Image (cartoon, rainbow, N blue to C red; front, side, top):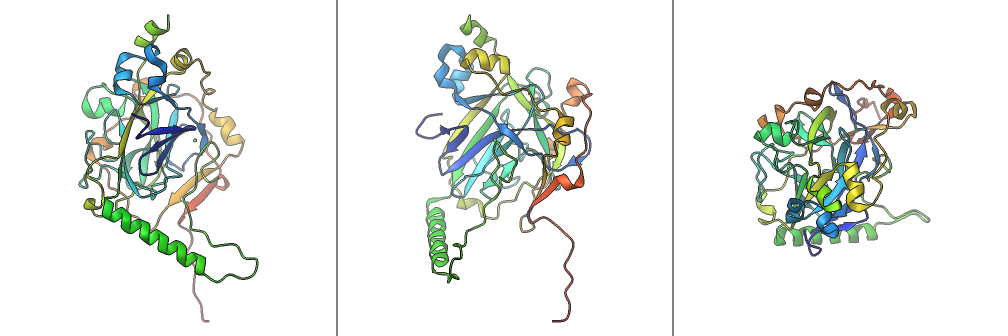
Length: 350
């Protein structure tokens, strides 16, 4: 990673083309059943690997990128709110594509699709399991075979998360910008009643720290525990099929970054900073009445499941059952977002 291509802005990663990615802490779901989307419980702090010299392992320095602290079995989701222009974003977990289940590639592919389309995709909570669902991202150590990487490839070499963004091809981008300029001009010309507010374009909910609508030192560094992502429970979330032709996107990535996952004790040793508090208790969370979300877009096509990701087993199969009791949210806590399906409206004589 270089400052010319990828930057940290607060806790957000900014990739070329206006792509913005935040890593958001969240409640881990049970590994049985299919659930609504849990909200954000704050953003993970993100720091540059190169700022810490010999306090990080040599292989991390060679890979560059950034790091963030995560607890064993802690869940996360990726927020793309704030992405300015259309972009294709590849998301890898241990260099296995979280969308297609195929090995990491420097090129976009369509069959199967190995990328997300932004800003249409507002967030990603886990690996694509098809039929309108994903399997939640859950942190586990390397070496047990529990990661997506270990189960798909048979090896655990990389760990972490990989991001790679592709802008629109120059001609397509120029056409998109011109269309946006014209739409903005049309909105300015729309007649308004006295005192009425200017019409605004709808934007995806902006996740972050709030709920979704509203984120000796050298010797120790060489023994840094490596972390990767396994999967937890299933939740209702679509991974959208790209509506543009593949040739609309640039052939080469605009930027990429390797995200290292660090245990909280190692985070403190490397950075001198306190890690975030431990994950929230499930029962206390639900008793507080915090909301859950259903996001549905009736105009978009969901990607089909892939063979490679469909066979990935949850972390509980590797680390043992979780005996913490699950508190089911009440129907009143689940809030619909996007084109939430509802009862049909009957028409009459008029």
